[in-house]
Every structure is written in C-alpha cells, then in structure tokens.
Amino acid sequence: MEKPFRFRYVNEIAGTFVLIAVTLMLVGVLISGRIQGWFLPARIYRAVLPDQGTMGIKPGSEVRILGSRAGQVDRIELRHQASQEPLDDTVDTAPDHVEQVAVMAVKGDDLVFIGKESKAVLRFDLGGFGAPYIEISRGTTPRDKDDVEMVMELEADVKDGLTKSVDSIRDALLPAINQIEVTTATIGKVADTLADPKGDFQHSLLAMNEILSRTNAGQGAAGVVLSDAEAAEHMKKTIANLTTASADLGASIKTINKIVEGLDKGEGAAGALLSDKEVAKQLQDTIANFEKSTAEMNKVLTAFTPVVNNTNEGVLAFGKAAVIMQEALLEYDVLAEALQRHWLVHRNVIKVEEEMAASSIPGGVKAVPLAPLVTPAVKPSSTPSAKPAAKPAGKLKGLWKPFH
Image (cartoon, rainbow, N blue to C red; front, top):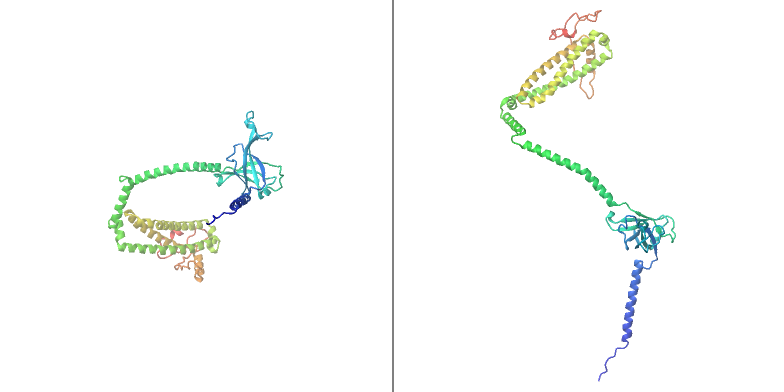
C-alpha cells in the first residue's frame, strides 16, 4: 500500500511569496513617490488674493515657477487684515476686515529661484480662457525661510480687452453696415429705373440702336460717308495732309522762335529797331495774326476726331471744318511768307538759313529751307513811319500793305 505525498514547508513557501509581493509593492510606491516629489521638503508661502475674490483659485490649483509646476495651492484660509491671524469665529468680524489668503506649498529644485523680489501673479491658461494658476516670478536676492508672505498681483484680464476690442469693432462696423444697406437700396432703385421699359434710359438705348442700324445700312449722311470707299480714302488723305502740315508748322515755329530770340537779344539791325514803338507795334500785330491762325488750326485739329465720329450734324460740321482749315493753312502760308519777306526780319532770316544749312540739329528736326525772298528796296528815312519805296511782286502784292 502506497503512502500519501506530504507537502513539506508549504506555509514557509507561501509566506515567502507574500513577503516578496509586499516588498515589490513598497518599492514601487517609493519609486512613484520620489518621481512625484512626495518626499521632497515643501515650503509654505502665503499670498493675499485680490478683493474681487479667488478668481477661480482653489485647493489643488497649480503653482508655477518659470513656467514649470513647482507645487500647488494647499488651501484657502481667512484671516484678519490687522493681526494676520487665521479667522476662527466670523460672528463678530466686520466683512471689510477679512481677507482671503492662498496657502501655497512649493517644493523641489525650483525653490532656488524664489527671492525677496518674487511676486505671486494670478494668471489664466489659454490666453485668459483656461484654468487659473499662480505664477511666482524670479527673484535676484536670496529670501529668508521665515519670509513666507508674498505680494499677489492680478494679470490684466485678456477677456476684458477682447470684449473692449469687440465693442470697438462693433461700433465701427454698425455705421458702415447701415451705409451699405442704404447704398444697396439706392442701387436697387437705380437698377429698377434703368430696367423700366418705359424709362428714359431704355428709350435712349432704342433710339441709339435705331441710329446705328440706319448708319450701318448706309442711310443718312453719316451712313453714306461711312459706306463710301471714295469718301474714306479722301478722309485718309486729308488726315495725312494734316499730319504733314503739323510737322511743317512745328519746324517753322522753331525757326521763328530762333529769330525772335535773336530779336530779343538785340542782334542785327532789326534788334536795334525794336525800341521804335511804331515798328514794334507792327511786329506785334504780325505775330498776333500768326498766333490767331495757329490757334484756329489747333481748334480745327482738336475738333476733327469728334466730327468724324458724330452723326449727320458731324458730317456737315466736318465739311465746314475742312473749309476753315484750308483757309487757316492758306492764311498761315501767306503770313509765314510775308514774315520772311518783311524788311524788318529779312536779314535775320537769311542768317538763320545759313546756320541751319551748315549743320542739322542732332535728334531734332533738320533745317527747312525757306522760299527765295524778294527783298523790297527800302530807303532809310529819318522818321520811324517811313514806308519802303518798292513793294514785293507776286501773289503777296495785295497782302503787303498790312505788314507795313
């Protein structure tokens, strides 16, 4: 018969496992406590909370130093303002003699940053919208261990600033929005007026469309001119002639300006005669006539383009403008030739012709040769009003008198 197996040292083995488990648990607790700073010495500081209240500070709120967590608020206690002793009985105590104090437990290596100048600042996470916490500022001189009182400061409330900014923006935007509404209503009325089939704008559009249709169909004077190839070719030639005349006019004006500059400087006999009042008056009349002709030509050139684009009245006005332009050009030719042949400026004209023929102006207009001159025989007279003995021949025969 077999004997039953006996478990020897069962209690000892079980007890050993229990002791090992308890030992491991204690080691884990110690390690966790060291990591969490449970065994570090804590230093107590007190800071009086603002009159507005705790502002959300409560037991367990964070205490930070230089942005790092260095402790927490241990409790909120009440005390007398005068004696700074904890308040045990609130029955016979005036409310305005009681203050709230945040008791902070700070520990760790960050205690070294706390100095005499350090202050407790009440702040909020997330730019003023998060949880409140107390930030202890960095000091410069060591602080005694017995000095546990700190000054509490309240950071500027970002929410109030945002509220004021929103109010300012609202005050600025409301008038603009109202103005936009008024403008929108006005635009709506204008659009309704323009879209009205019986309105003046629609009637004007219909009339304009009718005029354009008749013009495209070749009806009316404007339509005939626009559809006639010969008239268009004639218009192109006229514009080319105007361009050439303008260039010649510019060259002549430069020549005349040079002559006038010489006269102003007193060069030659003509310059010496400028002191004569009668001669000066005759010269002024000649220049005035020339300027009048130039002004008329400029008016014609300015009015030419609108005349081409106008309707029947524009076509009629174009014909009149062309006649006026031809007369102005003819008068300009007569005045220019008369001015060249004038006995007062004749010598200066020949001198300028010789200078301009010898060399051309760089980057400008080359010298323009003038027509041969027929110098009238002039006998000097003792009186300024003496007339020349002979008159110029040719087509200027009837036009010479006004210049003398």
